[in-house]
Length: 311
Image 1 (cartoon, rainbow, N blue to C red):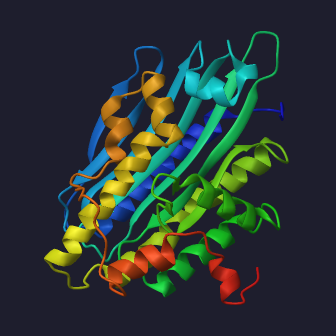
Image 2 (image 1 turned 30 degrees about the vertical axis):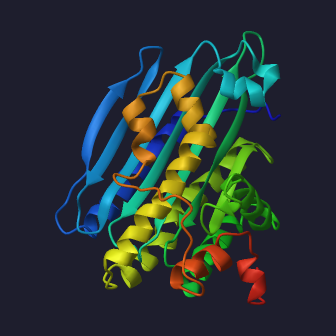
Image 3 (image 1 turned 90 degrees about the vertical axis):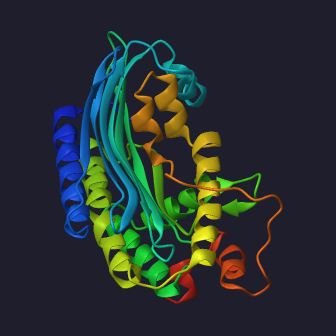
């Protein structure tokens, strides 16, 4: 692991600004609905700024959370991945967001950018960046998926020639529900343990990912937000949201780390949709739009290579 200079203050300043910019961008398309802000402190060290928008004309619920927590002992979810860091003090800071739109034709989305630092007396700090963004459509449109991945590839262009391919494949592996045999959505980018090339280079890449999220998502919102829908589409949206809940509560490492490290429960679980449903042994009608999602989109695909595109 890299042990060069770690500028936590610069990362924190960027993350707070990113949260504010994203809140402003969402509010600009929400026609009057605003985010509610909660400032909170963690008893064992640190705190955060949670912002949630509910019952908007576009977003049924949108949460954008900043947190910066620290402590003297890593939680089990962290030492399970990094047993050599047992006994280290730590600090973790990041911005995480989840948007659950009202219209089933507008995809749910998630993004996260974060820095983790572990420290032991007499030793240089051990650090890494993580994050990415992913898209979970209910009624996918192929051109939207291509735009999403083109923007993800552009975010990676200055970091490394193979960065998009690596982090796209990592996203497909991570956002996968093995008990369902399907991906959570159509993927995007996911990276963790990132310290290749030094702190400044990795931080620049983190900023690229954070800054490219809204350009990846906003055009999809603009094209789909006024698409008509009825009870069938709404029912399917709530059913698929159940899969989102299953992943976040069973597999998501960030949820587990937050709960085990004594984070604020309301902020950690803001990723869950306000409404969801489950149906026993439900299957879509053959060749229906719902069947197309499951058959053609909820699996790893090389979206851009299929079109013959190269970086």
